[in-house]
Length: 61
Image (cartoon, rainbow, N blue to C red; front, side, top):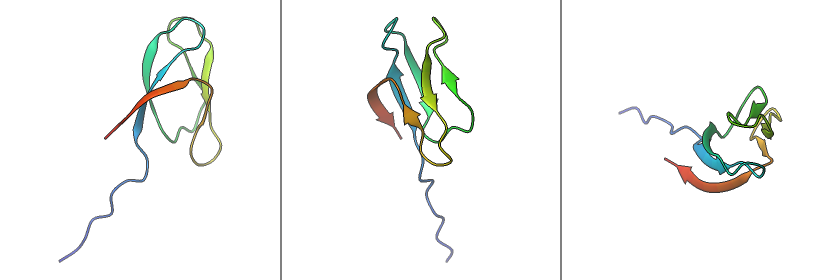
């Protein structure tokens, strides 16, 4: 029996500090993510887990 490894990254629901828009982003991004409403940067890539600049509301499974 082969055991399948679960992914180590999750989707994260964040709130923009400027306009309060809620947005779902991936936990390990490869390019910068900006708010879809006001354009403020929400997360920067680091080569691993993202450096979040917004408040995390919940981690989605």
